Amino acid sequence: MSSTGGFSAGALRGGGRGVVDHRLARRHLVNEFRRGRLRQDQVCDAHPELIRAARNLGTESRATCPICEQAKLRLVTYVFGARLPAHGRCVSTAKEMSALNARSDDLTAYVVEACVECRWHHLLRVLPVGRGSARRTG
Image 1 (cartoon, rainbow, N blue to C red):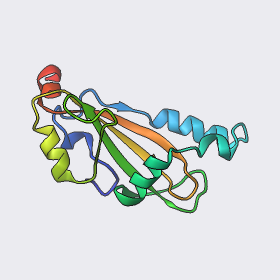
Image 2 (image 1 turned 45 degrees about the vertical axis):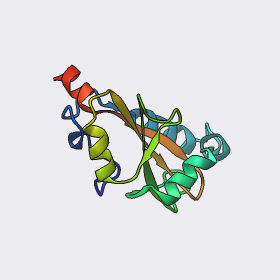
Image 3 (image 1 turned 30 degrees about the horizontal axis):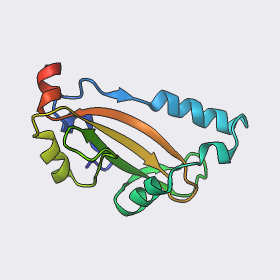
Image 4 (image 1 turned 120 degrees about the vertical axis):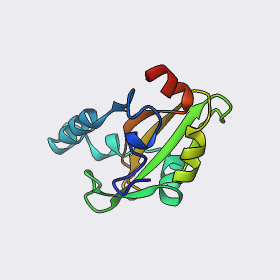
């Protein structure tokens, strides 16, 4: 895991191809909140399981929560795909991610940032994982 949070696109097979970045949507949401067009209870609604995962398994990022501006955000990575639980697998170490990345099937990682104080959350990136994605994208 990188110190900037989560797993970098380059750390996964495919060299970052197929990565979907949600930073523009994040910026828009935060700006709408700061302009008063969204209330805190409308943006701070993370599921209790996400907050539990963020608190216990997440990686602290350098970024402070843009909503409460008090706590450091925590990054949580979930991987979905064949032969994984329907609710996905929460990956907390680079070793776990490396093992998933070595698999021959197509998997997808979702990196979510969450604030354990105010319960704000946002999907940051969607990344291909596994050899199946590397063969397909190059």
